[in-house]
Amino acid sequence: LKYHHLVTYCEEVDDRYMRTDEFKELMGSDEMKRAAQGIPCYTDYLRIMLWYKNVFAMVEDKETMVIRWEDLYTDLDGPAQALLNFAGLRKVSRSWNFDQGLAKVEDDLFIGLVPTELYDKIGEFMYTIDPEAFEQVFAANFYTPSPTNRPTPLPTHSPTNRPTPL
Image (cartoon, rainbow, N blue to C red; front, side, top):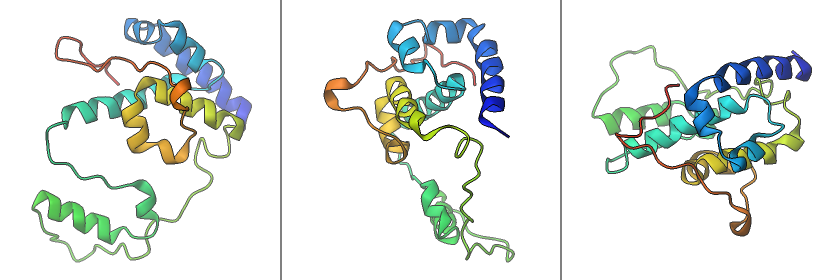
């Protein structure tokens, strides 16, 4: 798979989503259009950030546990057991053997396909959508805009302002 194949695919995906009223409304501001310009599959990044934004809104006053993807590279067993403990569950299968962790895959769809010069732009776009979710989940992997250069985030969804279906 080459970058130009990704761009062609992304143009089709972005065009399909931008035909919907929800995406037209979300991308209606000049700031959002400017932030998304030149990013392949910007509607996928938008959907990912809206998912996290809605998750954080949903669990705002609840006890939560965060397991970071990068922690799973070296130890799957520890986070899996911690998750079971958090949920008040116990392991029932003897086949669970995560001692090796995840093998790091550098050939992920976007890693290696998206030019590294777009990483900062993607980070800025994701930050524009939801600074709090971005900083909690993605900031370690992307550039974070300086305080004087931070765009206005999208409003949080409320029961009367339903989230966009993903």
